[in-house]
Length: 387
Image (cartoon, rainbow, N blue to C red; front, top):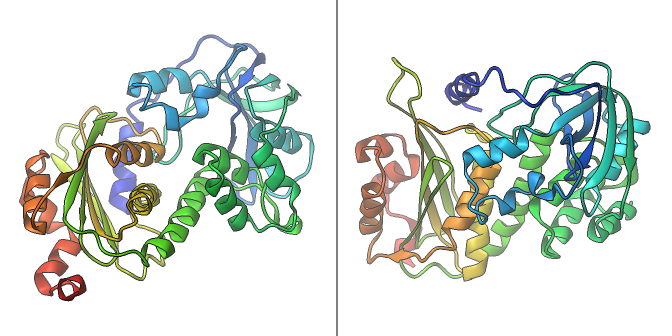
């Protein structure tokens, strides 16, 4: 990730150093949504374990970000739910098949909330916010873990049992069969897919981007065979202290993601802008803006498949001064909502672009100075103009 963006988001999350939950004991019983978390620290030896609240019941909503925006939830609602989730953890090798590893897989593949009893080596403390993954509450090392396992999700179970099916193909088949992104990603992270000899835990942060990237790469190969979009159109949406304007325009595939963060700190630059882009050949290296690039790309490619059209896309995102990093799901689900709104159509790219600028707070010159695709349009006519 771009060093400047990483430093900024780290500074924002540091504003919440004392995330607190209700008083806890060393043994907690609760219903995991189902949810597990695999860290990155120490890879290939990583911390693995469940997330559970200190109560029983149907908690599936706590780990289903696809439902948060449609239900009208706001930042405070997500924080309130996610910070109730207690993280149990044990350091294991990514290929480990021990008790904690197996129980974590049982939880991750469950169809419904799973009853869990976790005994910790100390009272769980703290909390966690991150720009890539959903927040959670206090954590502690596990001493023992017991679950009352229920039925597995039958789609995930089928992929798990097929030890000759490659992980990529499992992801694509599940997505094509209507499985939710969050369910696919969770199973991917616990090594539920792939050839049996290759299966291993994948840190949650990496698994999110891996699934976003796998799905978007597959969709891109499809949409590049579609006819071009007829006219420029803008999709808009605002929630979670973010506003998005997505300009689709007649062109062979090209994509640029731009995000502007408004200052939350006295003495800091009023606006910090970060961007990344790709053209028809796609992106080969990891994006400098992090996992949000792939989440945004998936959302717009899903829309193109729905329209059966190919287009260029410029996405402008503004994150305002009360924005809290809650994970890249925020980008994916906001844009999924945006492209389901009624589009505003234009006669020309310039009209659409000027409209997008007019709907946002960042000055036009700042967007233009940081945009590679807009600079490229000034240097040469796009191939599509000759078609």
